[in-house]
Image 1 (cartoon, rainbow, N blue to C red):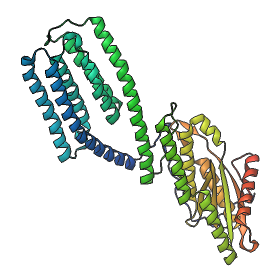
Image 2: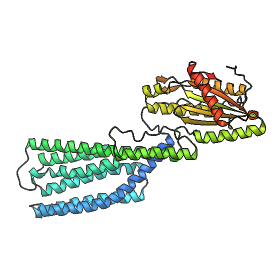
Image 3: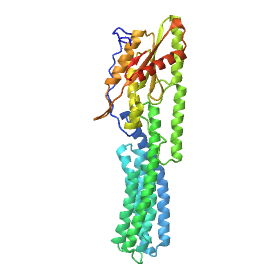
Length: 426
């Protein structure tokens, strides 16, 4: 292997290496910009959801009050309490809607789902208490499943669990401590335990199901937001759920669509490098220029050593971040006129126009050394990353084809891998 010299074509490129980013096993790796954008969108969505839900609440409290009047055996005594319950509930819903339309406080908007969940359960419990005998108060739990579903689906598992806990507390307080409003037999302790246990099981299933659905939708939204903002972070691995469903298929379709679009526009979606099709087109163009100027074009083929072991040991999210960081090192090492491409998996190609042998070898050795010295991995759990590099040189006077030049670079890379890895060979 030729000895690198300091007077190569890339000596002006002494850009600092990117700092080692902490690797986590959970995606996405959210940047402050992405986090702010997601928070703003989530706040606006919460506002829109709560505004349209107020009409459902108006209809629901009206139907609940009407049913309570029809089925209670103490109509005269129930009218005034029902008016109070309905009036207070409507005041809460209407006032929150007004504030949502006229105020832009993120913290205020975040508190409204909790307040409305409390109001929903309180209204249900009050109407059931005024229309049910003590043994029939399990209606609170039955109707309480509605706010549990709504909270879990639109606002997440914590809100769903909060609504479920409120329903259980309201049921037990009215069944154990409140004087009966409608005459009838009291429920047994065993019956109360059974009702609460059954409600808890059903609520847990609903909260898990709707909460998981919402979480996966957030991942899909994050995936789209990362692409929209062009953030250099690891993308969520859509479509890899343990129990697949239609949403899994949608996630897989998004990933495939993104990859196809990236192919068409010429960039790799994970690293931001060129893809193979764009690189081959650029290489043909550089070779035409080299023939006209009687200059040279060097091709550097690079492969991450033992990359499968990194994926198997630390997980695919860690492997994705390693790919991104290796790509970042290449981008700060090349010149403005050079081209970096990811051609698949852990393989990269770099095109160096107007680079002679000595300059190309020096560049490749410097790139190999920078990767070897870079700190990859978790805090306290480093990941050893090295690369093997193969070189090929196309001279304009030889009229070499781009296909042959790529084959020569690939053959040199194979020699570097079989010779022991972490080296540069021609």
